[in-house]
Structure formats: structure tokens, C-alpha cells
Image (cartoon, rainbow, N blue to C red; front, side, top):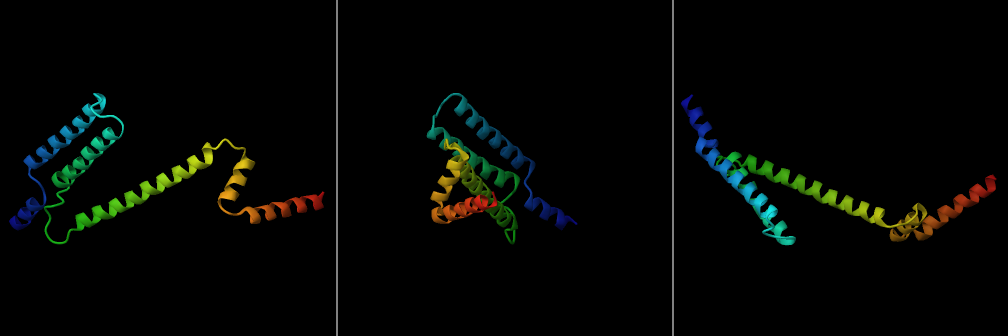
Length: 144
């Protein structure tokens, strides 16, 4: 039983390490907040500064709370973290791609017909789209 208890302490941090991680997290958060509120950086500089602090915050969380570097044997926690990172990356890139396409399609001041024609031309469907539309007009004309 004592062997199991020692193994538990080997994979989990001490009270002191949790306090250090908590204090570092608070400090990094407050530094980012104060930097933005007091305009220490503007534009891209502010973005880079806050992003750097966010990455540091991520490493503090991983080391002090998730104990990424402390487990023995296979690094299942690390592999799970990498997989989760890949999923988040795919979701974020996919969302940006969708928002770009929505912005492209919605910001042009066109009527729905002009937008349809623009999409047909952009996609290279000019001849095929025109012949389908022409066929529909002929069918409607014959039905009347």
C-alpha cells in the first residue's frame, strides 16, 4: 500500500508546486491585463506580447497542474495533449476558412442574381451554368 502511495506522489505535485503554479498563472494574467489596459503595446506588438504570455501560461499549466514532464513510462498525457492540439488546430483553421468564405460571399454589394453569376464565374461553371439556366427557361416557355 505504501508503494502505491509513493507512486501517487511521484506523479502528482506537492502543495508548494500547486501554489507556485497558481501564483505564476495569476502574475502572467495580470501582466497581460495591465499591459493592454495601460497601452504598453499597440497593434501587432500587443498581439505578440499577449500571445507570448499565453504560451507561457500554457506551459505553466502543463508543468504545474497537468504534470506533463513528471510521469514515468509511456507519455500518454503528452500524446493526448498533442492529439487535442491537432484537433483544436483543425477546428480553428476550418473556422477561419469558413468565416473568410462567408465574408467574401456576404460583403459584395450584389443582388442575389449577381452573386450567383459571380460564383458561377469564379468556379469556372460559366458555360455549364448558362446552359442549365437556358434549358430551364426553354422548359418554362414550353409549359406556358
